[in-house]
Length: 296
Image (cartoon, rainbow, N blue to C red; front, side):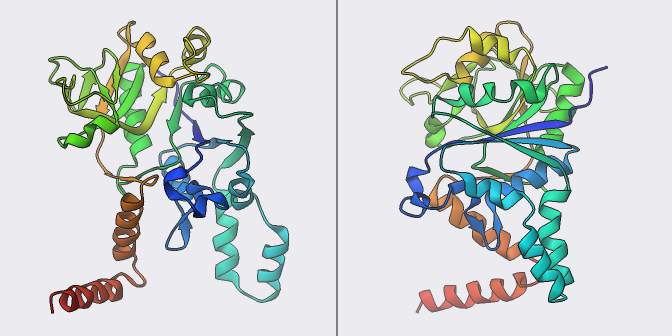
């Protein structure tokens, strides 16, 4: 039986250039969806999947991410003295639900380099990996939990994928599943083709969307993976690992938002706002009235 996964790693090293100028001062991972940072939703997904320990790998100049997740004694004391018990519970909840630790990537040397910072944290255990700008909504089946279940059946590395029919599949890594039709949403994966040109037929329509289960042999594989342009790529390492036949693509259930993209961020803000129990109905009515005005 495969050991239960209890650890997750969330790299947050990108510069966020698509969100300039705000990311000059605020990391893209803590840009808000209404009142909650993107990264907080990803952390909640991990916790709701059964994760107890989380490593957030920071890029240089992203200390504000750490400030969000560590306790703020001054704020908590002020709220307690003011009798604001609901607000106090809210801010304490951020740091109490899991053990959250941090590492800082010395230089932006690629996704594989960011994963290497987790070696001492995860040790000989398989772990979840989630990119800090991929938000996935599924309140009933958190995506990391779905991949953990898939890993329990196979013991292998799992890529979280979804079927992507649009021409913009060229923006993503695409799972090479050959003619495999899959079983219970699971596909054998022979590798990943990064950003395949439309001039060539993609190896599948399964795009990798920011969630993985990685087995501990990823570290040894990364050490022998060629560096390209000073960057160590995770995709290249996964392609080496796929030769063992123990890499799978799992077609997860959920709505994914690209939070590194302005349109993706706007869609998330609107849809999460509509789902909100406190003001969702009022917001829906506002949007309805706005749509009517735009038709005049």
